[in-house]
Length: 113
Ligand SMILES: [Zn+2]
Ligand SMILES: [Zn+2]
Image (cartoon, rainbow, N blue to C red):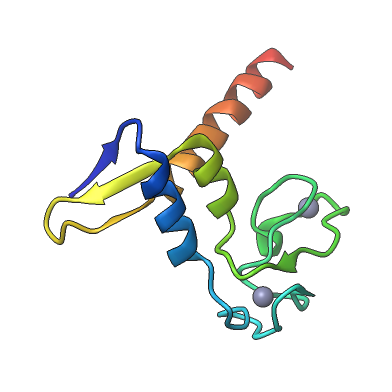
């Protein structure tokens, strides 16, 4: 089971950030660091909406760049979204929560419109 870790300390965030940053090429399209993801890459995000580019049809996705981090890592770090697994004791960035918060924001926006 994953649990939210509230108010993670800065050293923990920095450690996770270090761990989350790899020198390797994109796990999906295999481009090198700081290169544009290829067309059809699973990891690439739409720079306009922030959604997965594969599923986006905004028509203005632009080219996302592989910076060695999973999409959302910078945001999770900035917001301090961290969770832990009580089975393995593993601590990691909470990408799911990031996604949920984004969806919530979207819903609010849609209600407003
Ligand atoms: Zn890629
Ligand atoms: Zn798009």
